[in-house]
Amino acid sequence: MLPFKNLLQIDKSSSTSVFRQIASQLVLLIQKGILLPQMELPSTRVLAIDLGLHRKTIMAAYNDLIAEDWIESEERKGYRISSRLPIIKPRSYANKSSLKGYKGKSEFSFDQLEHVPSLPRILPGYQLIVDDGFPETDIFPIEKILKEYRKLLGFNVLKKSASSWDIGGSNSFKEALHSFLNETRGLNITTDNLMITRGAQMAIYIAASLILKPGDQVLVSDPSYFMADAVFRQLGAELIRVPVDSEGMDIDAVEIALNNKKIKLLYIIPHHHHPTTVTLSSARRTKLLELIRAYQLPVIEDDYDYDFQYQYSPYLPLASGEHDGNVIYIGSLTKVLGAPFRLGYMISTTDFLQSAMKFKSLIDLRSDVLMEGAIASLIRSGEFSRHIKKAIKLYGSRCDYSACLIQRELSEMIEFTKPQGGMALWLRFKKEFPVSQVISKASSMGLQLLGSSYTKGKDMSGIRFGFASVNEADIDFAVEVFKKISLR
Image: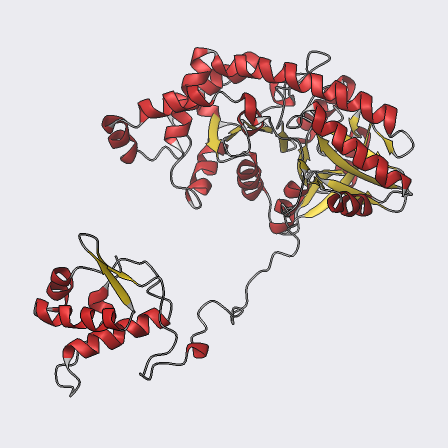
């Protein structure tokens, strides 16, 4: 309820009766858009007490407004602003055109963040959306999540969570997650090495913010994950790009950069590189770990979809090797659970995480203890691992189907290498099919391509084709759209 005691100013020395003053000021609040249609008004008794007036005075004001259709009254429901407000009334009020509010542009200067790319919008009239590589929501164990969530909504749990900060994540979730990560990624960490964030993006931002200062140089791949690039630019860093080929980031080029520049940070996605989906080879991993130790190089290892491997056993993360504590390992449960579940994590030394939690407290004072508790129960029960196995089987089948169909039907238009795992194909369009034109033409045919795209010169352009969340019929439709574009 709005603070009507402060909004309504009564002048008892005025020649205008008090009830008319109240009525006039309420109308003005309606015209300013402060009181909106169907908004509830305080009862006559409550407003009379707030304003220190007799209840009959408030009733006279309300009755006046009811007669002029500004407010309406329903038995046992009280008073509300009318849903059909009068357009013209025989009174003189402030000119509505002078009430700008938030309709204009800001008069003050601010950072418009032009270096941060706008995320794609879903347009009306689409038949199919192919995303960047997100999970299939139909297989998500929603009933089990709801069951665990309901358990956590009890009074005792809510009372306890209300008095606990849990900035680095709830203890129950960290206990379950650190065991899962040790078992699946060959790590050897305790809960003190683990901090929970709202998605991997927050973890990247926090880690980079603690390391970088304006003017520092950061090694990134070419191409690289565009939102990580945006983070580094926001912090004032200079991006030094290193090529990517079929074996992942060129580590020889990394060594050259380390010898010739003052590199402050390396950002790398060794497992299913974004956007190209390639995996860093074993030989390059070994050499990179040697460089990390030799140069005491801080590294952000972004391992966003490690769990999805279809052909071979995955390489273990860099974080599982010998790196002298220089690798900050970042991952996400969003790729397992789905885009609405913003659960990420950062693994590092305890001193670094202490500072990371201080930084996190500036933007996020509490973790989502209820969701963390529900997911912790799934991990402990084994349901989380069973869901991953089910997803691997489904996504592997969709990867095979989409790769086979695109290779057979679109080889004159598209080149790609089938990835070992992950949730997307990296489709490289031949120079006569610029990716921007493909996206535009596909949209006009009901296919929205929301995957990350990349263009370098006239001879190279590509886009991520997320196969995990689309079924075979959807893949057929997308390929048919591509075929029509290729024939135009």
